[in-house]
Length: 416
Image (cartoon, rainbow, N blue to C red; front, side, top):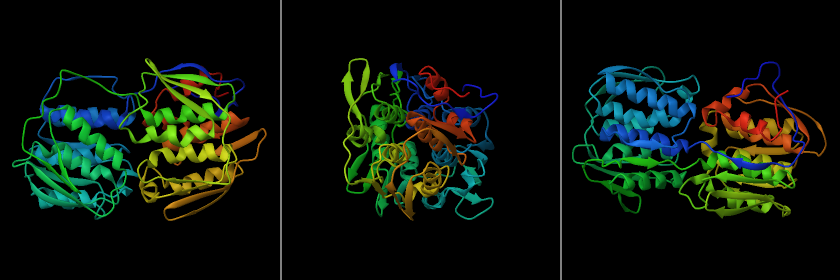
């Protein structure tokens, strides 16, 4: 990440954005593939692996798990690391302690623990019931039938499906309640299929037979659509802009590929090319108000909310209950920062309403990141509208997009 030595003031954009952008690899795909490679005990080469801090935590943890029978495993603030590793540790002989950052210890894990206990896992809470840190007596996990509530996070279901093929007797997983972030679960199933593991689905029941995981010799990780969304927002907000997102497919199982549908009408034309996606600014279509359901793509909401506010587009975002449980309370964090920029915003338990957008004209906006990478990434786009953006924690982008500030600098948008 670019070092910010003197100031955290991001200067306004002074010209249209242009040229190629090399995106990081998909963080969600990378962490799933790392788990599968470890379970298969394979030497698969993962090309384009994410450089995110979350992926670095996953790699370090898996190396530690492979090297020793027991120990303390640190997951950082990464939900995928904490949740995906838990059933792996329940399979691996040894006494393990799984812990993370302070915020990670506030994110629920109880439904996954309950499901694993029903399959024989021996897991104890070391502090608050239902939350990390955890003590795991490994080597106790069996296969069988299990029920899991699906309304809090799709990561719980993914964690079980990833290990399903290695459980004695396989796994039959029945999801109860409304499934959130459905595309992420579908991504898991597609990656399992690419590794020779077939998931049979009947309604909300998923069945995996006990089998070997046949990892290919080489797997190419798709570029990250979550990171791409910020560039779509930039192009929509800066007239005359034209960017090429290198090697990014237009059609993807990644949830945030919905950015094309959401952001296109607000000022960006997206065209598939042999070498990636071409983004061109176009005239925004402004309406009396737009409605967005964030249940399937909650990580897209921060960038979309900022873009709507910049384009003076009233917007109601619903289905956001899971945003309360992310790296920050993202509903609250979005409301605080949008108001700081001059927007009129209201919010509720699972919704956010942008009633009036951000006033036009130059000025300074102080952004509180709340230790959340998506706050820094999304609100950087304020610099598209002659705003000088002052961040309290610009370094948090390393969690998913370590070289983001460097890439902005190539567009003439620098920290002073």
